[in-house]
Length: 151
Image (cartoon, rainbow, N blue to C red; front, side, top):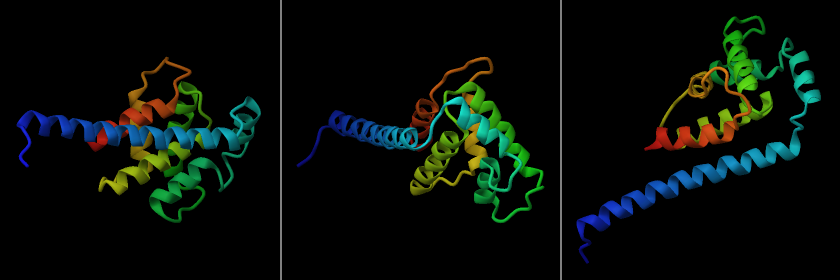
């Protein structure tokens, strides 16, 4: 049965909305799970900041995901640290939350054939929040980002 042209366009838009909603739900569930497992209070942030120099710091782990094994003194780690520091100031999210959301975004993009490094995604997230803004939910930024990147 042939469908009128306007109906085909409508169905295309509905499918785009379904994809965006699915991505939003996945990120929302992820944020709920990380909220249950990790405290976002100042003690976690202080503890995380105190361990940034260790090889198992969040920025080191993200750098190794992108680049494979790297030396703990590799200067590339500082790029991740700068972006995580910036996003931590702009958002209500902890470093661990930020990395979890970023890794999830990378995985979802990869499933759609888009290869983007964690560093690139962090840069995009950071650039999308103007300096001076605070208390932003990174989950909301990530949801919008995923919709824009997958259209």
